[in-house]
Amino acid sequence: MLDKLPAIGVQGNMLAEMQRMQLQAQTSPIAPAGQTVSLGTPSFTDVLKGAVGNVDRQQQVASQKQTAIDMGLSDDLSGAMIESQKASVAFSALMQVRNKLQQGFDEVINSPL
Image (cartoon, rainbow, N blue to C red):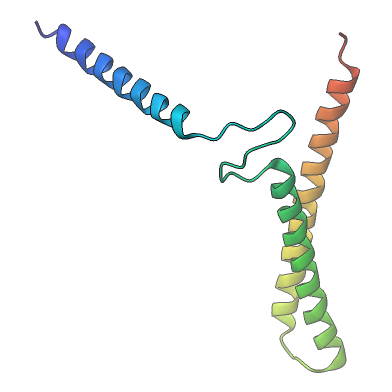
């Protein structure tokens, strides 16, 4: 008798999941051929553009702080150095991601059919 209780729970969960999927299938938009439907998740391109934009902003902030130090407008040398290091780390991480993407692309291109 106790062995059947977990099975009923699993079947109930599976039935609930199937009903949820059925409702989702009825309400989800279907894109015509050649078009995509945005479901609220950003595309890979958007994520990559955001990462490049973030690195660019960090480099601009670091450059502005260094320029302010050079011109004598600020005496926050430690803040400028920290921003410079943040920008450097972000750029290094971006280059590592680029290298991994390039490596993966090369593997796909060179794979035998």
